[in-house]
Image 1 (cartoon, protein in one colour):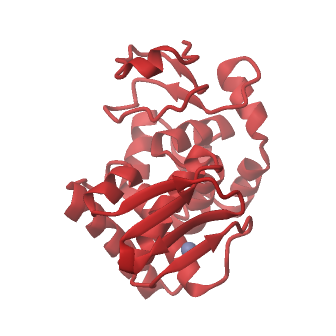
Image 2: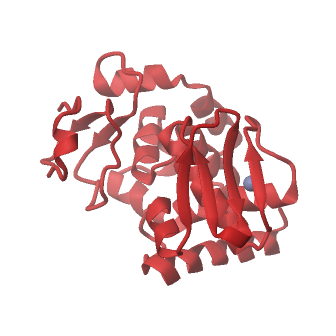
Length: 234
Ligand SMILES: [Zn+2]
């Protein structure tokens, strides 16, 4: 994407957050809350072959319920991007390697900048106590959960969009196995998400799904009886 266009899309992403939720660029955002604030009808449906859909004239966003949580949130932000960038109705089928279409690249870039603005990433690295050049797979995984995105989306964003890490570093991070990363955080084999909470994690809610694990060095408040019955552990 051309630099001028990238600057425009970034500005639109930040303006959308600010207009509908009043959120400053140094903080993360929940795309589902944003959808609600924008007046979208957001639905999760069971179609395994598709990622998401934006139907412009009905103000409707459909997301595949079959995908991992980070992926669903990113797709939601991507569909908001199609709306804000005035791409018209779009059906997004599952494409593991991304799409070359200009509109798809723009919607992906919009989603990355919406969920992980540059100043939010820099602030979080500072609070977490590392610089981007020293980031390990465990750090990247931990921070990806803070932003509510997949490990892959976070690492790719650091390299391609924010240019905070060089290609060799990116390659090393992307080659790391998620199962190994989760094991080193939790100390046992885990197939679901692991939230690694420290004092750096501010008031942002932890978006848990049933079966997720929490490793925390700080006291957490639990909101909602349904969470008490899940497999939370410290
Ligand atoms: Zn799309």
